[in-house]
Image (cartoon, rainbow, N blue to C red; front, side):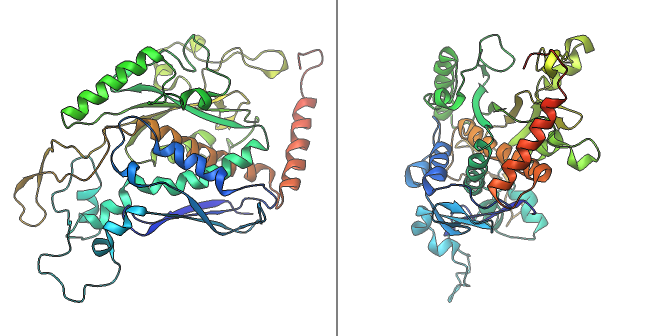
Length: 398
């Protein structure tokens, strides 16, 4: 069975659609399982007015019946409540009496850092709204919906995914996979209690202060999120081909999140500054690792250790104190256009990164073990894990 997912929809269109194919039959699932993830995505100090308008909720269009997946493609719809104010702007039909100035809310002053200009040139559009509506991070609501289904499947195999803000606005938290302070057993239970999803209370207070200062200045802030998957079995992904390597697939998926500019696993770039003896994880009896500097992958495969990924997000490109640009209509200098936006979306980006991580791990799990039904998939996984346990040296700790 082929696993794949796609999304459709624009930021101010009727709604967003997520389509997920390859989930086996028999997975218990409800709209509430998905909606809770959508609500987490909408949170975070520094979000804009859009989050006060939307109250995201999915409607099943296909693939689920009587509380279980059917094995057929799953389609989910999330309506945009703000559509009521944008119907004339986003209507798919041609205008009956076109205004010579064009539709309302045209964007002709592209924002530095956004897809506006490159997309307008690539697709030969005079109005950058034709680009920004799809390039908007609003699209990620459909990714989170697909990721929620994948998270539900992964929990059947004791794989748990969580995230927390490691840095925001130049403030670094002193809690994380590479810090001495231990992470909580259930990361999201603690992180979600923080308005900025930070596990360090002192850092949290300073982050909030910097968000307030940036808002007052009409500016925006970026940051880094750490995403961790616990319980990932050894051997997902492969070394045999460039496009089957798990770390490469994770990097591509996470880099596809709007405004993300960097991804690293384990020590990441820090590993380039250390000696080999300070980087590689020694193998202990029972095949456990003394450390997890690699972040849970070696040779493009999962090692069985926690999967640790850090994701860097640049500041949002819509500034209330706009930067210089050029007007697409006149070619002359201008101030960049301001669309309603956030001061920061780093806390929400962590939830989106969890979804993308879950999607990649689900694809790798199904690729290795297969199965049209959840029961068949479980038998296949159980057989593999028994084989791995049988390889453990005699006398080693279990």
